[in-house]
Structures are given as structure tokens and as C-alpha cells.
Amino acid sequence: MILQRWGFLPMMLLLVVAAITGATANPDVKDGCQERCGDVIVPYPFGIGEQRCAMNSNFFLRCTSTDDGHHELWFGFVPARHISVEEGTVIIDFVPAFDCYDKSGQQVRLYNLSMDLIDPYTISESRNMFTAVGCDTIAMGTNKEATSGVGCLSLCTVNATMSKENSCSGSGCCQTSIPKGLKSLNITVQSLRNHTTVSEFNPCGFAFLQEKVSFNLSDWPLSRTPTDFDRSNVVIEWVAQTETCEEARANKSSYACGINTNCYYSDNGQGYRCACNEGFEGNPYLEKGCQDIDECKDAGKRYPCQGKCHNTIGDYECKCPLGMRGDGKRGCRGFGIITIIISVVVGVVGVLLLLIGGWWLYKIMEKRKSIKLKQKFFRQNGGLLLQQQLSSSDQGYFQNQSI
Ligand SMILES: *[C@@H]1O[C@H](CO)[C@@H](O)[C@H](O)[C@H]1NC(C)=O
Ligand SMILES: *[C@@H]1O[C@H](CO)[C@@H](O)[C@H](O)[C@H]1NC(C)=O
Ligand SMILES: *[C@@H]1O[C@H](CO)[C@@H](O)[C@H](O)[C@H]1NC(C)=O
Ligand SMILES: *[C@@H]1O[C@H](CO)[C@@H](O)[C@H](O)[C@H]1NC(C)=O
Ligand SMILES: *[C@@H]1O[C@H](CO)[C@@H](O)[C@H](O)[C@H]1NC(C)=O
Ligand SMILES: *[C@@H]1O[C@H](CO)[C@@H](O)[C@H](O)[C@H]1NC(C)=O
Image (tube, rainbow, N blue to C red; front, side, top):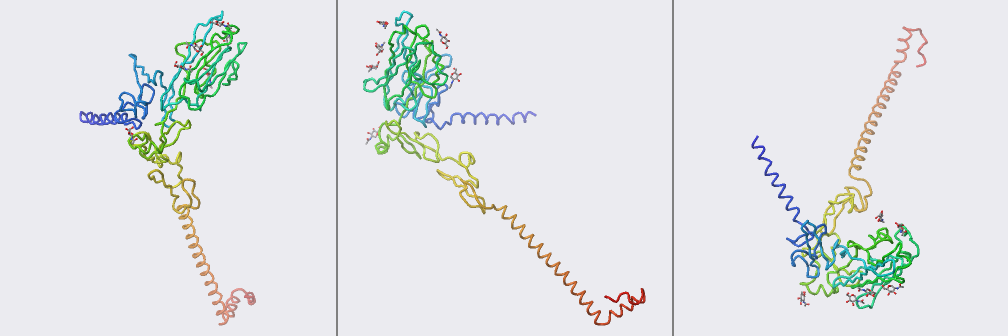
């Protein structure tokens, strides 16, 4: 009994050890580096904790924690919410700019806002929209040199219930896209009439950058006033380095892409990024690079195979079952070995049956022939007469004459 109890203790220990090693072996960070700050995963080239965990100081982020155990990841002076290596993005929380007025038209609050990014970061032009909400609102955004900018105007006279579909058409809300490759943005909000005609239902105007997919107009009622918790998500794009792939490859010590990767250009034209070669997966920025995908493990879903799957480096083979033709990844044609075996067996049995049948028929014919022959001999040798005589002696004289 005691022995039995001790028996499963080492097994428990083994399980615990397995669980611990499983948790530390993370493929997305450098060895010994923290993989997350609170809920946010921090993949390489980003790093937290120690400088060596990041590719360089541009990717080194601060992770702070409060006494109540809440962690915050900082992208400069603003919180970072999500980092993507595949897309080359960081999503940050940004504060909206606003201006507010009291009923007499006196300005009570104003908040202009500026964002200034260093290389290798740019504000994503494809994933953000410049948005303003208000009934007496002029919103402007320029880069810090005031050489490039956007703006929009939103006016209304009634307490408009803004349409349920996220449409900002200039009545209560206006929206516009931003220039490509923008690295800084000063956002300001102004009004035409100090909100005097709309102060009943719209005391404030807001202007902000906002990730398109997370924008929800119902978060911005006209009655809204600023709080300390106002945030909008902004998508920031990053590249590994601002050089061209050729320039970067020329210097092995600073080239950012690992093994089994390729170098590609981002849409915003600011430099290069790394991606795994086809058939490989992993973090392309780590030195060990990307690892071969075992397509056969996932065969059927992402990597179709109707036949026998065989993993190769960077690819996989799929052979159709014996006797079938075609590319197993797309589908096999013809008959499989089982079908062939069945047809052969059926064929052989058929032939055997035919042979047996033929032999049997032959035997019957033979028999008939010999009977006829016997009858012939019987007649030739006067057997008929004999029979007649035999019959007549039994049943009358002429009865069996016809034979
Ligand atoms: C943008 O804001 C920054 C910092 O507040 C300031 O230094 C710069 O002059 C501003 N640029 C423009 C065009 O307003
Ligand atoms: C905000 O921007 C407006 C318009 O450019 C300007 O008039 C105002 O002085 C700015 N206010 C602050 C506090 O920067
Ligand atoms: C708006 O308010 C400012 C001061 O807050 C004042 O100087 C200006 O005259 C007002 N404009 C209108 C149209 O009421
Ligand atoms: C404006 O409309 C909203 C909802 O449509 C409502 O909650 C709010 O009370 C209205 N404000 C005024 C001043 O009528
Ligand atoms: C927007 O938010 C409202 C309430 O906050 C929610 O009911 C609605 O489903 C959201 N719409 C979208 C498109 O997310
Ligand atoms: C290559 O990159 C390293 C690290 O950034 C740098 O110190 C070195 O000067 C570069 N070499 C050349 C030839 O550009």
C-alpha cells in the first residue's frame, strides 16, 4: 500500500517538470527573455526587461507593474496593446484631442495632441482614419513640420441621432484618411461659434486617429464629455531597418532576418521586413529563424493530401495510393489497389466458374453422346427388336414400335 503511494509521486514530479519546461520554451523571444507584459505578448525584435532581449534600442519597451499586479507595456509615453510580427504593427492607446465650451460659449477645456515617431516607425495610413465628432467642430492634423496634413469639418444643428452604421458623413462626425508615411501628427480641434448654437446637446468636439476596424460610432455620442479614460486605438507600422534589402544583406552583422527567411518591403516604403520562407514557420527576426512546417501533421485542413503524406524540408510530398494517378494534393484519379484486388479476385472467380461450367457442360455433352452412341449400337445390334419383344411380352405386341 505504501509502495503504491510512493509510486506515483515521481510521476507527478515529472508532470510538473514537463509543465515548467513547456512554459519557458517560447519560440517568439530570445532565450531567457520575458514573453509577455501583462496580457500583451512581446515578440522579438521587441524586448522587455533587458536591452539584450530587443534587437536594438528602438525595439526595447518598458513594462511597468503596479502594486495590485496590473502590468502596462509602454510605447514611448503611451500604452501598447498589441504587437504583430506578421503584420509589422504595434497598436497603441492614444488620447483624443478635444475642445469644450460652457453654455455661454466660454472655452472650458482644450487638449491639443501631438505624436512624434522615430525610425523605424510610421503611422499606418491603410489601417487608421482621422476622425472628428461634434456639431461645431473643425479638426486638423499636420505633421510637426506642417508640410503635410489632413482636416475635416463636422457641423449639425439638431441633436442628431448618428446613424447606426458607422458612417461619418460630416453631420455630427467626419472622417478622412491620412497621408502615407506620416511620422508625426499634431491634432487640434477648433470651433466656428464656440458651440453656442449647439451647447444644449453638444458641449465638446473631439478629434482623433482611430484604427478603422475598432471604430464604433456608438462610443461617441454628441453629449460626450472628456474623461481620463478616453482612448482610441492607433495602428503604428514598423520595419526592421530603413535600408533596402540589398544594403541590409551586405552587412551580415546588422541584417535583421534569420535563417529560412526572406526580406520584403512594407507598403509604406520605409524599409524592409522579414518573413518566413514558404513551408517554414516561426519568428523570422530571431537568429535561428524559421523552422520547417510538418505539413503532414495538419494534412487535410491547411495542407490537403488525399494520399500518403511525406514531410520534406520546406515542403511536403503527397503520393496517391498505389494504382491511382494524379497530384495527391489536388486529388487522385483512377482505381486504388483495393479496387484492383477486388476486380482481380472477381475476374479469377469468374474465369474459374466459366471453366467449371464449361467442363460440366462438356461432361454433359459427352454423356449425351455416349448415350446416343449406346442407343445406336443398341439398334444396330438388334437391340430394338429385342426390346420390342421384351415389351410386347409385357404389354401387348405393337405398343413400343415408334422407338
Ligand atoms: C507640433 O507639436 C510639437 C510638440 O508639441 C511642436 O513642437 C511643433 O511645433 C508642432 N508643429 C506644428 C506644425 O504645430
Ligand atoms: C491648440 O491648437 C489651436 C489651434 O492650432 C491653438 O490655437 C491653441 O493655442 C492650441 N492650444 C494649446 C494648449 O496648445
Ligand atoms: C469664442 O470664445 C472666445 C474666448 O473663449 C472669444 O474670444 C470669441 O469671441 C468667441 N467666439 C464666438 C463666435 O463666440
Ligand atoms: C440627444 O440625444 C441623445 C440620444 O439620441 C439623448 O440621450 C440626449 O439626452 C439628447 N440631448 C438633448 C439635450 O436633447
Ligand atoms: C458598437 O457598440 C455598441 C454598444 O457599445 C454595440 O452594441 C455594437 O454592437 C457595436 N458595433 C460594432 C460594429 O462593433
Ligand atoms: C555593419 O553593421 C554594424 C552594426 O550595425 C556596424 O557597426 C558596421 O559598421 C556595419 N558595417 C558596414 C560595412 O557598413
